[in-house]
Amino acid sequence: MSEEKQHEENHRDRPMTFMNMVILTGLIGGIFWSGLGYLAYIINLTEISPNVLLEPWALGSWKKGWLGTVISIVMIGVVSIVAALFYYAVLRRFPSMWVGICYGFILFLLVFIVLNPIFPGISPFYDLGRNTIITSICIYVLYGVFVGYSISYEEREMNYKKKKEAKV
Image 1 (cartoon, rainbow, N blue to C red):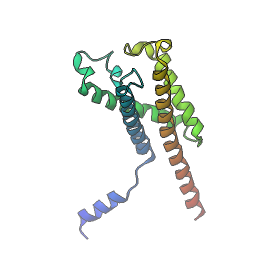
Image 2: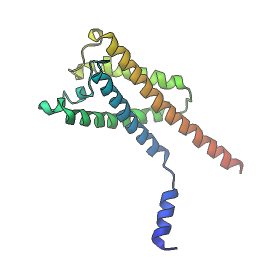
Image 3: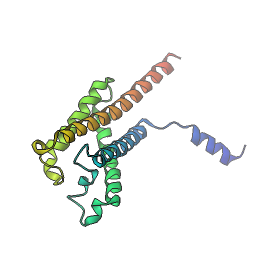
C-alpha cells in the first residue's frame, strides 16, 4: 500500500472531536433556524427579518436585499457558535430536553429584552405583535432543543464509550 493511500485511510477513520462537533452544531443550528426565521418573515408570521443583525453596523441599502439576508444568516450562524460553546461549557451534562427548552427561552429573552436597544429594526418587546412573539419564542426554543440535545447526547455517548472501554 502506498504511503499516500495509508495516510488517507488514517485521516478518514479519525472521528470528529467533541469540540468540533459543538462548533459545527452551533453553526448549522444558527444557519438553519435563522433561515427558518427568514421563511417565517416571508410568510408574515413575524415582522423581524434576520437582516436586523446588520442594521447597527452596515451602511447602505444592500443590507435589506438578498446579499444582506445571506450575510445576516451566516453571521447568526457564527454568533450561534458562541451560544453552543456556552451550552457546552455550562449545561452539557444535563440530558433533559427541558434544559434545551429553557436555554432557548433564555436566549429569546436575552435578544428581545436585554439586547433589544442594539437592534433598531426590532420594536420594543411590548410593541411587538403576538404572532412575532410566539413565532420567535418557538424558533428560539427549537434552536435551544437542537443545540442542547445534540451536545448533551454527544456528551452521554462519549461517557458511555469511556465506561465501556474502561471495563474492557
